[in-house]
Image (cartoon, rainbow, N blue to C red; front, side):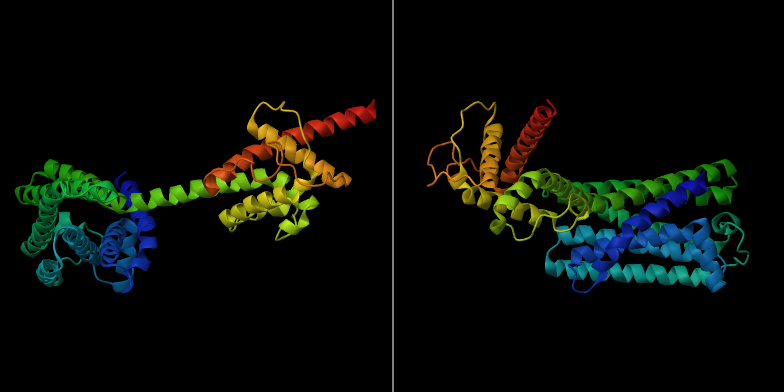
Length: 392
């Protein structure tokens, strides 16, 4: 069960980390770089501390328990990056550089201690659990204490920074920082359980050791997922909004196709390209919004081009959309039959400038989509009537 949870968390963190690699470029914003560093470091830690990742790393280096060193070093880097996220949001530029320099020096000192004691610690059996089998060794105790002390200091600093920022931020930034702070709170719980587990090893309380291992796995997983969610959710919301916009535009484009095709057939000068087959139209998923806007404009141009074929119709339609669909259908039929009524009429039933138009392109696309649905229903009804008349 524990391996499944670890694998799931590692997979989720890796999926969140892959899009962040492009934010490590020097041209990227400093905030994006520290966020990318935090997410990628958490993903590295999750991968090398799980069963397959640790075995692969050992096979590549032949150093026993190298995954414990790399994984905990990556967690410390992620903790420092989390500090920097709050530092960028709270401190001024001059204070920011000085505080960042101090934090980096503390990280480098802690990493030096970790590497030194890991190299000197007697841990030669790669199949043994590093913390359980060698946790009572003095050097391994220093290793664990250094790691948990740095992690605890970083997460306490995050909580203090959040206490200063929570009344000064709002909107998505406030939500992201609050989620980060919540993840840091779970991380402090992980630190406390890790220290408790180390103390239980020295006293021989096996039940407490087993409890702390499960608790550390749960709290560490929740802390990592919350940290990733805090920076991933705003981007996901934007992607979801873009997807919904694309789906709506795609639906409107398909709904406008029959009306636009008939208008382009009788007024081909308004269309930049000839109507394509329904199959090609269905599989063309690129430039949807641009094609939709162009189609709306071409429908309006076709209405103006067909003003000479506008007919005076009785006001029998149930809705304005149905009335406009009737006028367009009549104009298309008259244009195909070659009828010409002379000068454009200025009545409210004409296809001239007084036709209703929405105040922006998106609303106009939706309005014309409703007109197109009425137009399709009207033409289908007329087609059925013609077929029934021929049969009779």
